[in-house]
Each structure stands twice: as C-alpha cells, then as structure tokens.
Length: 80
Length: 108
Image (cartoon, rainbow over all chains, first blue to last red; front, side):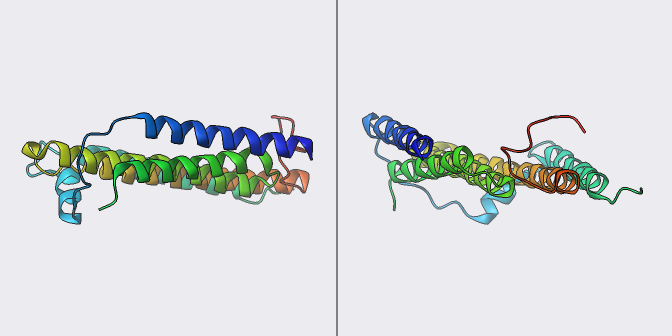
C-alpha cells in the first residue's frame, strides 16, 4: 500500500514537472494549422520518385511482416 | 484553435498515466497497454509540434513530417505489440501466469 502511494506521488511529481516546464516556456504566438490528409500523403510519397518516404514505408512493411512471422513462430503450439 | 501548451499538457498527462500503469500494474497485458498509452503521448507531441512549426514558418508551406513520423511510430508499435503478445502467450503456456512479479527469470 505504501509502495503504491509512493508510485502515485512519483508519477504526479513527474506530471507536475512536465506541466511546469511547459508553462515556463514563452511560446511564440501561432495557432495550429489545418493539415489535410492530402498534405500527409504528399509528404509521405512525395511529388516525384526521388522525394518522400516511400523506401521507409517499404522497410516498415517488411518489419511488420517479420514481426508477424515472429509472432506466429513464438505463439505456435509446441509438439510434446 | 487550441494552443500548443494544451496539447503538450495533454500528452504529459497521458505519459504520466502510462508510467503509473507500468509502475503499478502486475498484469503484463495491462503493462503493454500502458506502454502504448505512453507511445501515443509521443505521437501527439510529434503532430502538435509539426502543426505548430507550419504555422510559425508559413513560407515553407504545410509541413506534415510530424504526422508522417507518427504514422511510422504507430506501425512500429503494432509490430512491437504483435511480438509482445506472442511472448506473453508463450510465457503463459509455460508458467500459467502473466504476473510480471512472478516472471523473474529470463531463460526458458
């Protein structure tokens, strides 16, 4: 019980530290812009073949495939 | 529109909630969920700072790099959860528990 209270206090202190740090910064005036899905798509795939993050997307797809195979291998039933 | 301070405070609170769950919970699935909450806090920061940067520097046009990196982060989190859940399944089959206090050896 005492440990739980100490953990709650530690996490509250962490949150207060973050909030204090955020409030102490003098943020320049500026509103959040309206980014559309089209902007995200253009940044992701670029306007031509040389720009964008197409290769990174490919590598992440590969990572997901490997993770899926690893998950299936780990979770499969072992034969006794 | 909502100022950036509020987004940052929101993500700080999410991070603190996730940290609390990781520190206090014993069920490994709940710990995994709390790690995901902490990852989402980081994603919110990425998107908030990207939008804020676009507003501060309109000459560079709309910059959606933060959103794209958040997408990458979500994909990597999905891979992590797939492997984590499989490991938990394997641990449960062997020890009949997923209590993180009882799983105290790192060998099979």
